Image 1 (tube, rainbow, N blue to C red):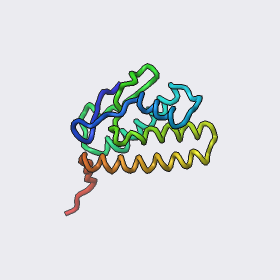
Image 2 (tube, helix red, strand yellow):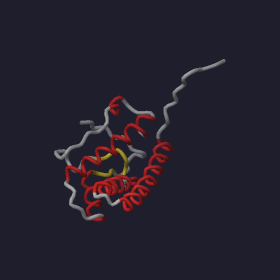
Image 3 (cartoon, one colour):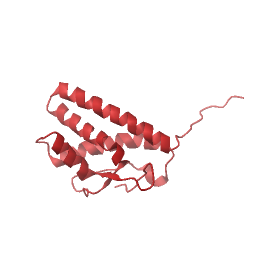
Image 4 (cartoon, rainbow, N blue to C red):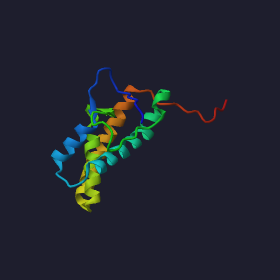
Length: 139
């Protein structure tokens, strides 16, 4: 399990697994198991890690993506701060809709997720230097 945390600004509030699960259950009552919802959170955390964290300056500790399961402490902080916490909520809700074959709802919720993801990615880039990879230098 990875214990890294890289946040935008010093002292920013952290979004936790339990906060995401509570908000999902409040916004979309569902019969999905806790472990399935944590699996969805784990999935989006891996995407965030690969697409956002690893494309910006980071420490060696941040090389390993987070890995959550049903035994993970609910107070575990997620990669994104609370300012971008709704992206987790929209992701889990959209996955629930997809599992329930509610495709119109899925499309709407996925659009909300994508907007929140884009904003989070933009905010991350404003506060963390992207890695510049020079493949070839011609003089």
